[in-house]
Length: 224
Image (cartoon, rainbow, N blue to C red; front, top):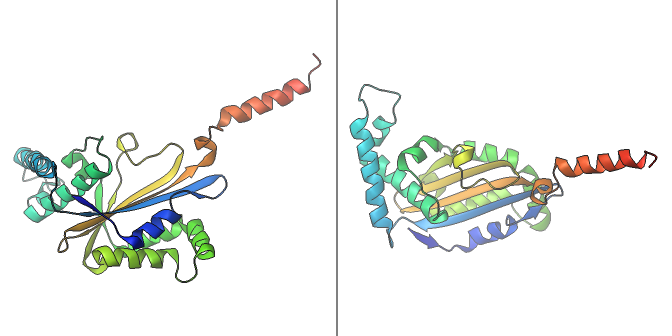
């Protein structure tokens, strides 16, 4: 997997690098990768393939609820491996399991993604319009993604791991989303993670501080 630089993505990344909205901060990051193996990718992809095949070998064909049916297709296994390799390049210090990751990936449509984006990035979109003349944030995002991976030809996946096994989760996160846009023909994938952080938690102003201030007011009223 090779990191790819695209100017349209960078302009959005710059805007979403640290969008302070008072008590909250919106953050987002787009990263594009070529699916061509580099460095240790080949060894890692073989390891992931063996993990999947080992899982398939132990799975019961009669179990329709098992993900085995989906993974019997070689193209499906390749897709999963590319997505997991992308995760490894984003978080090289984190150990991702192919089968664990498979449980957390869900195929989505552009309309589903747009609905989530419009709902949770409403305030960020308003700020974008203030700072940028022209199209909306989601329109600009669509054009940028379309230039890199051609949305109409893309498979879109959300990634929703358990909170205790989520490398994307930052301190003070109120909500967090991760999406992957994969173009099988172009052999490219774009990851997009965006989240909302509480500035009160990030800055260390937790309930303890408010309790301390309340205690101070109580002592002020007491005759010492």
